[in-house]
Figure 1 (spheres, rainbow, N blue to C red):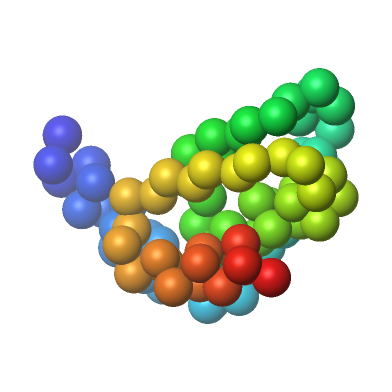
Figure 2 (spheres, rainbow, N blue to C red):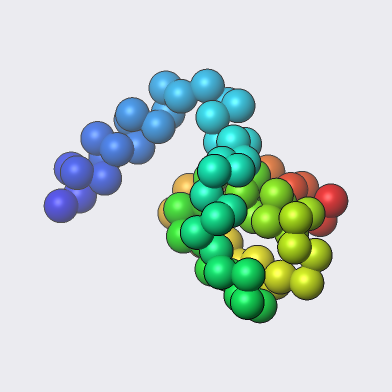
Length: 80
């Protein structure tokens, strides 16, 4: 199983930096209007969470990502 993650890490290492900041606006419709808290797993740079907070200011967004190197990007996106 470890080799599976090693291969995945290698694939993501070659992606353009802007890939991790995509907001994915087409996914907003899948979050129920009644949602008060959202956990986004595999959030990359947090673009979707930032967009969701902008579109629905009352929503609390929690994000979880395996890649620690993206923490600063996520923090920047969620603080805006």
